[in-house]
Length: 212
Image (cartoon, rainbow, N blue to C red; front, side, top):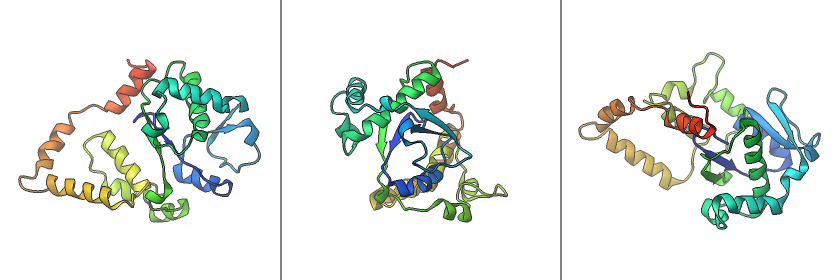
C-alpha cells in the first residue's frame, strides 16, 4: 500500500520467489498470515506483523469490498479474480486498527502485471545503483530534478518498475517533447509546481485526522 498516493498494489508470485519479490518492493513492514509463519522465507531487517488466519475469510472480504467500492470492483480495478480480496481487506483492517480511524483516502487498487514491466532483480538494482547506493550517488538522485515531492516519488516508482508498454513510453516521451519544445513551457510549469504543497501527504493526514 502507498499511503501517500492512496493506492493498493496487488500481484501474485510463487512461493519460491516471495523473498525476491519482497526485496524488490522493499516495504517498511510485512503482513503475514499466522498460518504461513515458518513456511515463507522473510528478510530479517524488515518488520513483520502476524495477522490471524480468520482475517482472510473470503466471503466476508467480498462483502466488505462490495460495500466500499460497489459490486463491480473486480472490473473497476482490473483484478483477475476474487481470491485477492481477502488479502486486500486484511490490509485495510490492519491499517484501521493501527491508525485508529477509517482509511478513507485509499481509492484505487492497481494490479501489478509482471509482463508489463521490465523485470530487474534486487541484486542487479543494487549493482546498477538505481535508487540506492553506498555513496548516496544513484540514478534516482542524478535524474531527480522534480519540482515537487510527489514528482520525486513518481520518478522513483518509474525507475523501480520500468514499463515495457510502448504506448505508455511514447506518451511520456511526447509530453517531454512538448514541455521542452517551442517556448520551453516546462520552465514556467516548474515555477508554478514549486509553489505546490505535498498534496498526497496532506490528503493522507486529512484522512487519518492527523493534520496540525
